[in-house]
Length: 513
Image (cartoon, rainbow, N blue to C red; front, side, top):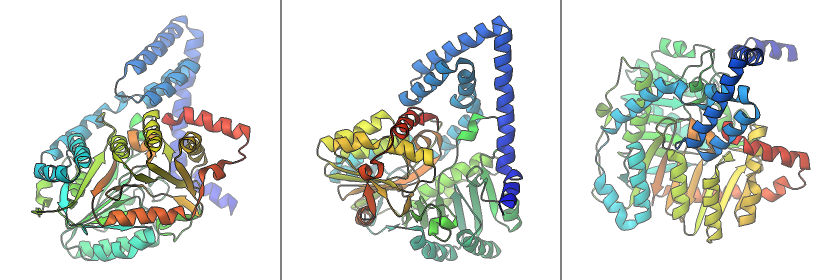
């Protein structure tokens, strides 16, 4: 059995690609080191290059200070190797082409969004702080807020709760189905969806599926897109992985979006794999969440999907406007603002939206996140909120999916506990939920983790809610989850000194992970 698994791994796409990348990296670094040791001119050049990189990092106004510090340490400690690694993986210059394409697609899509200035004006009457947050998101992403009925969203506290309703919604499709997911894995969940999609294609429904190549590298057969196309499903692979070194490999599509006929939209943390509905247990019980949206705002999710679709299908270039179904409300007291984030516009939308939400909280803010690896600015924002009397609670997993990421998360516990923040870990398993709720009136649901990868490297999405019925459900979900948690201090008590040192070291280099 072990030998069979080993052979399967050795013949897998992930092993072959990783092996080729390691060989390339080893060859490049070895060549540079040998040349540096053999020729004084090369040695002078590499020294000057290292100094130049440090100066560039210091003067880079876009890059986060924590990221700059980590790279400076690497370059100074390992001048030749560090400088080479930075040029390959730390600099954005290697992905200039992709950056230009992404920004062009976003610029084009911003022009097709409806004018919702009146919505912001109306919202200002209810909550000026929320209106300011909406203005920021509109400025940063081109996505406006929408007025909705208070029951225009439905929040699901687990993947297994969403599963039957998702299938029912897919069966209702008459015109089109768009699916974008970081992970797709053949099994009960995906196969049930695929059966419906295949039937819908036969019925004349336009079905499009997009998945991230890295997210699915170990879960789908190679060239799986060809199988879907053979079934009549239009399929695009986001940022295909190639066996050569490229900084663009770091930029993944972490979004989870489903749009059905422009009437129903689904977002959240749930990928299309069996562990997300607890049919294939991994890391204990898998706690997750998602939300169904029914309103004019579904168009924003449609535009997000089409942004990435058009990015990889330049010859097709679907017209956003054909999917817009205006249905504005004359009067409303509830609002929603779907928004996206990408790694190329110099605007860290997810982190800024979270910061604004924390700063605006007066009574409480409850946060679910699978990872908590943040920069000093966001950490200080949370500490300040707790010190001014806000009830700040953060729930992370007790059973990790990646041990080193969990250790980095735990490295943040001490300063938060000291400031009065209630940090807890979901004891039954892995808490993959990405949600925030504050003061019984504002909430966030989406794909954004509280970590560097989501804030700076990934394509992400989410929705900001104001005064919807779902907000009470999101709050209750957190409180119910809290009952199944152990506190952060208990989770880290009696930690050996070497382990504490390793946590501190990992936290220092966290921006590079």
